Length: 180
Image (cartoon, rainbow, N blue to C red; front, side):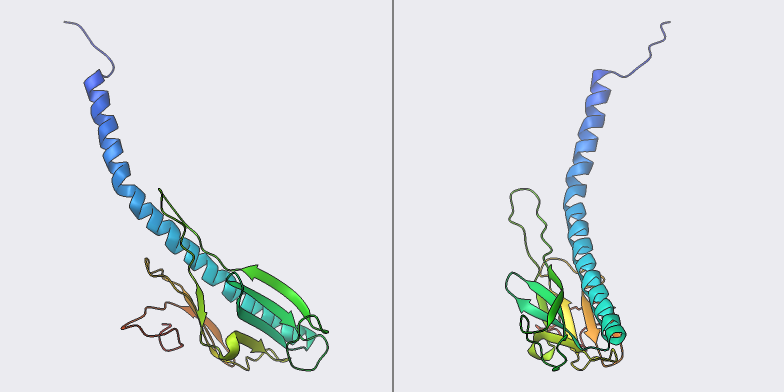
């Protein structure tokens, strides 16, 4: 009796077909996972920038502003260096940080989707005074129509900044109540 070792061609083709089927099932789930992760990372980055801005306001004893809704889905942090308690970039105030908040992701032939930053803070501007207290309160949401990440909103209150999950029900807007 002969002792054959190794794989036959048919066995090898069956294994390759099984791996291909499993990969076809896993790719859409992986792309959704990556998209959720990028939205969560964007939310955490905005939260980190808010907390740093709050600390800078208290450390420098100056008012700081985080303005949303700029061209290209950008936001920026401005320090009130001239001390007049109004944001006037270029006329004595200093831009401390400017970021583009984009969460693109694409697979196959689809175009990348950019999740917008939506806020209900008055004037689209979070303000921390010289003591590090928020003078404008509200919520900041990184909205998404296709996925629901576990962290995608930030609530700014007078003494506290927290992250949560914004899950719109019946078309509700981004606000502190919907950020749980």
